[in-house]
Length: 136
Image (tube, rainbow, N blue to C red; front, side, top):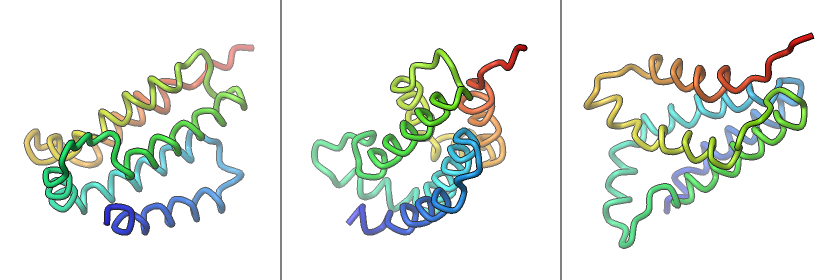
């Protein structure tokens, strides 16, 4: 059920990545994050209900989070291979990013943050903050 509900997001991101081969991996990753946040925003009540109904629920192990984990690791590895990031623990960085994204409903509803604020912070921490310095 979760995979079926998430399939439009998976398809949208796959289409974007297929059509944006000339875009640097960090910018591709940011666009994936924007799509993911938009999806989460629209599905928060449904996702909460499904996760609470699941026995032994581990939110960061859901099919949606597993897909996002795989996608982020792939794009960070691409960025590393191209020299866009250096000296970054990709596995831990992806887990930190997922933990940040996991609490999106709290930040939007309880803290009153806007999507724009959240995305700006995510860009600063997980995209711009990881770029390799180009000294020369």
